[in-house]
Image (cartoon, rainbow, N blue to C red):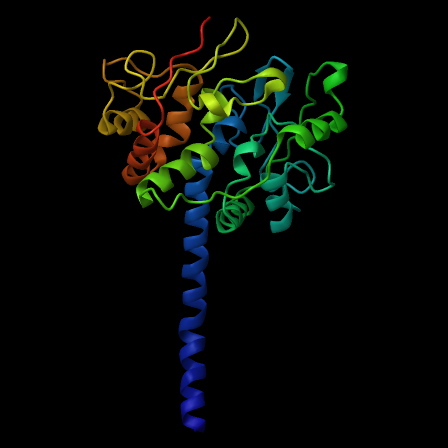
Length: 291
């Protein structure tokens, strides 16, 4: 018995740390993949030459003012270096910072609320593994009536529902994976779905496009409408576009979508891009809103 126990101890001593390292590496690789799938790099990196990835500072111009993305490197003072897993879950699921203050919905917790707990924790683990960058966060440029976090709380109380993604049992695994990526992790509807009063996403017109202005960038209709949307695109066309940015007609993505492809969708597996395609092509074909 002593020999058996000694043998088991030696086996654990030799193999246990290796297994733990393999598990940790797999967790970090998963977190890195989720970072790309979630669009974190594009939004949390300043739109400037030489900008440090994830150190924040990107200006997001909206009809309610200009928001600046925060530093999400693991710097203790200016980033997320002292965040716990619970802090990450509360931020992505409930739209609150570690002090309990409400985030403005420019941060797409309205979509991220559907992300699974294992995915949130894997993303958190990867962010903690990165090099910390000391960079103070810029103050949002908002009108007085919008600048209070209490205003964000009132908006959430009226319009925000916190809930995890629930697979549709009547749909395939591929469709459900696509729905998870589009609706939650990739938060595509934050740009591609039109909004009603007070910036509320119009769920009845999912992915029917949003109108822009001189200062605000719009997003195209990506429902399978034959003329207004992507109804003439095949699943392979969508996969190709999300991979290299080229449309079936030969044009290339521009504006914010070019950055989304470079930083995010081109890093997805082909299986995930095709899952996105299956979901998008299953949506009701909707006309774009009138100008």
